[in-house]
Length: 288
Image: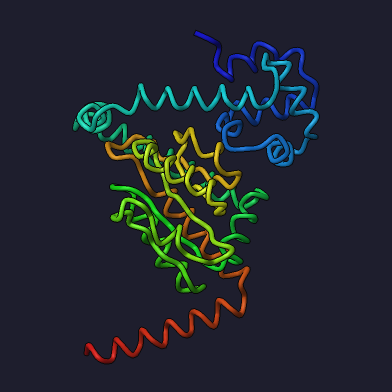
């Protein structure tokens, strides 16, 4: 079995420069950075040059940044395959009554770490690009699958209060026709994906790329396909030690995005909020 990323870093630590050590320290704590970042964005986040990143990945045994990224994507995907298990297996691992106190304490720490990670995304240039897409597109479509569909439904419900033409796609027509037939020149698809539903998500992503549709992928740490189709990938941790993977960080991520889109739209968002609120008040009066 090949050495993990952290093992490679530890083995080559003595040969690293000061700047490369800063990068090593960051990736030892946040190895998923290789999966969700580009060469340039990782360099900016750590405060080193892109050349330092390229030199670093070669020193720890990769041909280039692309190979290092593929290595980490494969590792996380294979880990998900081995650890996901059935709900019964996860119940046995995480839900035994005699261990609930232990797991509750660990889960709390992991949930807090996941939330902190999401807030950290707001400092990334990619976050601001996603906000710009959501604010400037003529139409925004969102979709998700089965047990996580409520994340996309809730996101669409929030966003339509600050900008027009936001729609949730339930996929019942098995073709996502509304997305592909919409004549808007600039439209954005938001896919919310976690590991079990990657087949449906990746198929839709591929069709959207072929159609020239801008795309944002909001996903968990096991999403291995997203960066093949879009540079706009926002990843949050869901495996915090519960029988059903936690959706808390994903929910907070979409709430923060809505907040920032409203800020980017300024008065336009304020006018939309006021219009929606006025309509809601009329319906509230008629139901009393």
